[in-house]
Length: 92
Image (tube, rainbow, N blue to C red):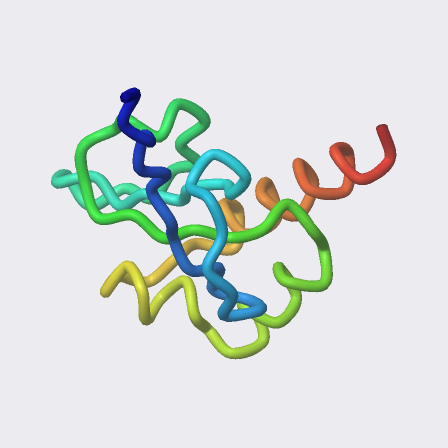
């Protein structure tokens, strides 16, 4: 019998729902202290996940959940870049 492969689940910062890791966008704080959007999901550092929807992004931004999850202040440029990326993905 073939064994079922386990699907890694992560919680969205905005809606607090557990979803498969591949469906979420990862924001990572590297060991050097910079905060980046991790498209590969493989970068070293502390990660936080968010659904690719603007509603979840707004909830996470309003509650300063990025800063809490990453234990580091997140610059407005990174927040703006993530918002722009989500807007583009929702339009297409």
